[in-house]
Amino acid sequence: MVRVRVLAGAWLLLALSACTSSSTPPPPAERTAAGAPLPERDGLTVLEHRAQPSPALSASRRNIFRERDRMAPAPPAGTRAEAPAEAAAADTLVPPAPLVTVLGLAEKTEGGRLVRTAVISAGGELWMVKEGDTVAGRFRVGAVAADHVDLTDVQSGTSRSYRLR
View (cartoon, rainbow, N blue to C red):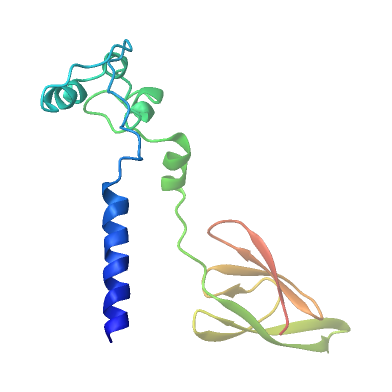
């Protein structure tokens, strides 16, 4: 126990002597923007100099957060800026199409001609449709093939092929 105390005391003395040694050089003297050293007066002169705005920084009036405002001119007061694409899109808003799934296909011959019927799930309902029929009041059946059904969205005019699952 005595050895531990002696070693701890020696370590403490060594640490204290290292902190108080004058082997470290003094910090460099503070200088003005022109390079002249500042006169020391209880450290206040250095703090006062640092508190003054730099002439190089005060000359710049650029605000990076307002640059985007300068790029796009503001619309005249009292008007609402609206892009042409947004205006066109507002006129042709189409509600989303219901999920369509082809569940089955059947075929039979009527009057010497092959007629295919598709079983489709759309809008939570089951539909048995042939070419030219309307599904869920939204789609027109274009063609019924052996492995897929072509549907045209009546509201948007887009066509899509749905495969048998």
